[in-house]
Image (cartoon, rainbow, N blue to C red; front, top):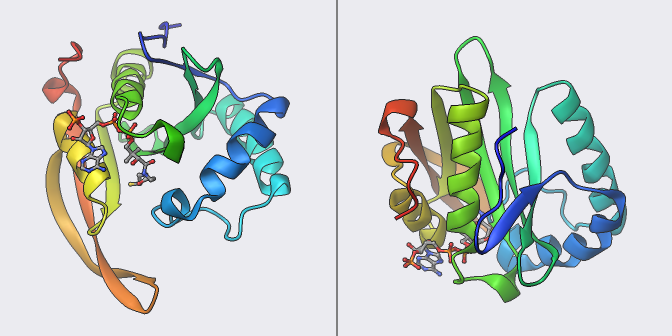
Amino acid sequence: MLRLQGNLVGLRILKKSDAEVFCPLVADRRVARYLSRLPQPYHIEDAQAWVKTTRQQARRRESFSFGIEGQREKAIVGMISLMEIKWEDGVAELGYWVGRPYWRRGYAYEAVHFMLRFAFEELKLYRVFAQVLETNKASSNLLRKAGFVPEGISRKSRFQNGRRLDMVSFGLLRPEFRPSKS
Ligand SMILES: CC(C)(COP(=O)(O)OP(=O)(O)OC[C@H]1O[C@@H](n2cnc3c(N)ncnc32)[C@H](O)[C@@H]1OP(=O)(O)O)[C@@H](O)C(=O)NCCC(=O)NCCS
């Protein structure tokens, strides 16, 4: 298998003991508010169940979720997933988060790069897409930097804190992917 290790982060399968490390990171409101599939409030039992689910889904080749391990921290600093893979179409949805103490260090960018190599080179998918809340500038900038193209808007598809928000779809196709990081 492709080696998913860079200078800043490595991607790896989750293990049981990771749950207590990543639980407080993802439960942080500044991270959780952008994750539509996350149970809220988020408890340690949710984190433990997530570790199990990711291992089952990977075995069944339905979704692949990896912990983002900081090379310096030697611990999980975030998560990245290729979800709901449609093998017949060669399409999957990308999702990710990085814990607040580790923002703006280039961790998500490197993790996305490795996940895209995994998607296009290892799994031979053709299209990866992501859906981002209109208010999530960090994520849309990250996707643009990684080569994704904005494709359309699902109007008012989230209701959050009394506001109806648009979701923006971004997509990247295999021939558009530049495997070099810079
Ligand atoms: C989006 C997120 C994953 C970015 O993680 P990160 O490790 O801080 O990102 P990086 O340091 O790798 O930054 C890569 C690029 O993303 C963009 N970016 C990241 N944070 C940003 C911010 N606060 N404001 C504007 N752009 C930002 C920039 O283009 C940056 O490149 P640059 O450093 O050359 O300017 C992180 O903010 C996060 O987990 N947010 C909450 C969860 C979330 O939004 N998940 C995605 C749901 S669609």
